[in-house]
Length: 192
Image 1 (cartoon, helix red, strand yellow):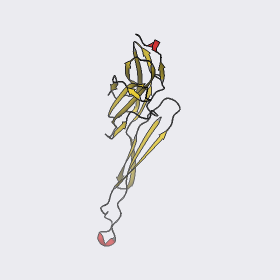
Image 2 (cartoon, helix red, strand yellow):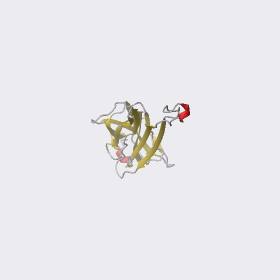
Image 3 (cartoon, helix red, strand yellow):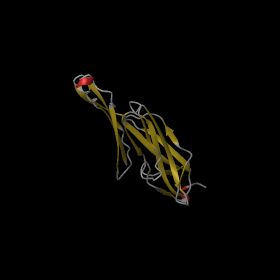
Image 4 (cartoon, one colour):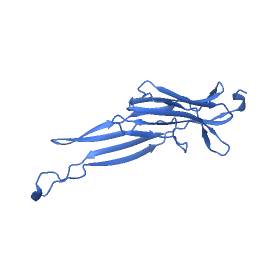
């Protein structure tokens, strides 16, 4: 699943004052307008989270000049398509890379177990990393004591972009994004 948040900040020239109020001097006005557009694109395979773009405009003596700053460009994906079982634990792992590094990042990974009432119970043994990834991946994993039933890996991440603008991708309660495939663990896979 790709999440793109695009924030555009543009400098608009202030309206000119009428000739009798000091022609050629800009009147006081709101100089910025912010437009926020959220676009969500479904991906058929592993969820990928793309970065947030922020454009900041400046002006020069000769007119309007626009410059663009990409706040971050990171991809978070599952190492395995679903949790793995071993050593009496169910473990889910993610990896993250950033083509454009944010200033800060925090990624939390956990595994969830499907309960009899249809809700998912998140493990308390979460993995958290605050290492800002670059082109070399950063890994994090969460795990829980092995039990039979359906398991999935989930993650959430947040931080601050290049200019300090915050971003947040919380755990998705619907399970549509930032959620791995489900793995059915049998009683025989868990040591007694």
